[in-house]
Image (cartoon, rainbow, N blue to C red; front, side, top):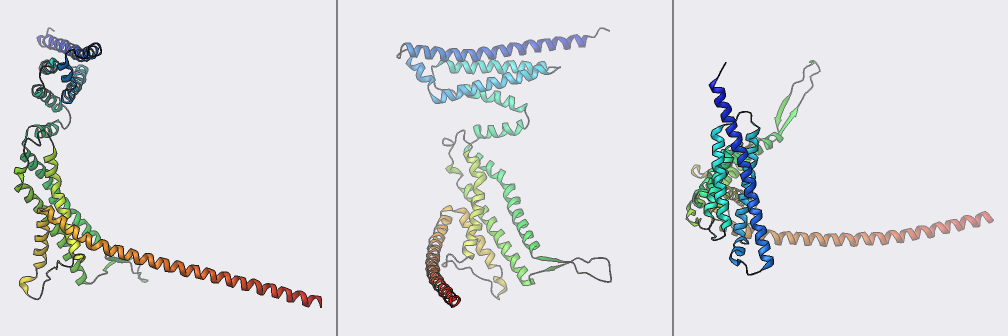
Length: 388
């Protein structure tokens, strides 16, 4: 039976096949054109060093070389994608037409770069970005890839910092308290002693659990755990507030096309968390004696004073890295002399022990000599008696 739709579809497939074959030829011609341009440049340079010196300087520019390399890599991606489309049994004519327009745009960008009369390559870069976004959308996770590429290339530096903070917020609000919670549960689990008493009158075993610490020790553990958690969260919040107040310092001119502001917004809260926990441990270990922790007394209004104290210190330390550096430097100056003193005392004790061992060895050698002389005397006495 005669079907108009089959004829129309066959014409579309043939047209797609012709377009794709033409595009592959165009890409090969473009790559050959770039190769011929550089071969011509090298040949002219070897014949006459003053021939088209402006063109030579243009193509030896690192920015131009980098963009040309990216344009060539993009042409290779287009060639591979066209080869994928060719393998499909049913091809989409609209997609083939779009590919044709993308290859034509790549021709314009590459021709613009090969003219060699200007160093402004923003035009070629924008064309390359458009083709890259198109190819990425057709790959797995292409939406996320395009999102981050557009953020790095087009967003302002303060907006990039906010993006990093937004990415880090779920991690620091879930991972940090969650990890501390797991550590606390594991610590509690190690304080449980499981016992299986044996009942001679019954064949069943009764499993019981007994907490090793007393109730006051358990409360003390939970209090310390909560203080560590409060210090970590306060350090995180301090660093976040510090970033938000310093957004104006991230200028677009210094971070144009750079992912550094995103990394700053993502990692700086982690630094504040680490500083908060570190300051908590330094203060509680009494390394710095000048910082005294206010303890809760019998007054009911001051039972939470330790939490307020560590939250304030950790927040300030997370807000100002300079204060954290000063505290760490003071702890280092306090800790290292004590460590050196202990190492010196240990070395002196080792030398004294070595002297004692040496003296014991000499005494053992002297005793061995006395034993040997006594054995010879005994042997001589036995020989005299046997002769008699």
